[in-house]
Image (cartoon, rainbow, N blue to C red; front, side, top):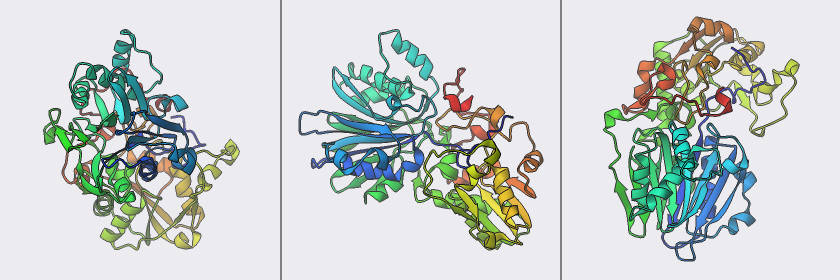
Length: 479
């Protein structure tokens, strides 16, 4: 296994593809600033690029679009937000899995076609995107991006020519596309949300005064002081217009056939969000409790690797009775990219973002909780940092099972040959990372994290809810 030792511990984590947000203010108020704050709340889902597109349902319906590379507060400011006039709009934050990280691949996408204008934001990954792209190209389609979201937009636009309503075009397109997707779409007079039949990616509905909202996570609703109404069901298409909310459930699968991404509960979603009725914070507390029950350790303190390991560490402490403490200080002011040190100084690439509180661990037996180990390129250094700070023992507990297979549904879990758990026993992994003991969450516990709802565990088992693609189109990260 080739181990990139220049990685920071955050880079050796799975990343989500993106977050979507949409709003329709029926009273005609401008919505760009609300989208901005909604995207700010979803920033953890993507930090490479972002964008906002708005239109005025009462005016000429001209679309105003602004998108660019960087964080939300880097791309937008008060002046350019004020220039985005319109009462209906969609927003997007992106982390690339399929498609390069370049300005042309930033979303939302805006298509002008015979029926008007289409604004689209997509979270997820299609497994038949290559096939559909070739099909479209041979019928004259000219692509402006390399992302599968454009394939979805083209199919919706083409279906719209033959349908009476935009939402029916979305349903017809869903019959052709395969994979993971949560979509927020705006036609000239409607805001439409769609979720793939398996429910891989989250999407919820909210309301504030006389405005309706669609968002990847409920935390975005909280940020803009909106009321949570409900989740979009797997396979459902919801339409918001002047008459309120309408639903088409013709694509819905039976509950036992659904497959939510379990890593939303473990890592992706913000802990203050709810995912299909389950508190993400509670899911992580449960994971920690299960680790304490199934993999106890004699120790003096339980600590989490920030931020996603903290809630599971609290659960472990609650269940075990071992005190919970803070052992790591995270530097919140380091950007997405910083000048990485030379190979001989590679330790600094972790220490610049994470440092150990010596007073918290010196002379103690430490249980360290983290949410996952992907490549294993940084876990050894984090363990060594604890020992350098005086920890007598370090017992690592992981609040997910071992990754043994890649993901094709919008998560950048790389090819199995790059995974530390592929073809290694847990004892062999323990030796690599240098901990005194190592244990993972029992895979049989995962369904309890979702409140009993069906989940996808393909990255832990190699068995997927649908046949994976023959060609891996997920981008350079995975090769």
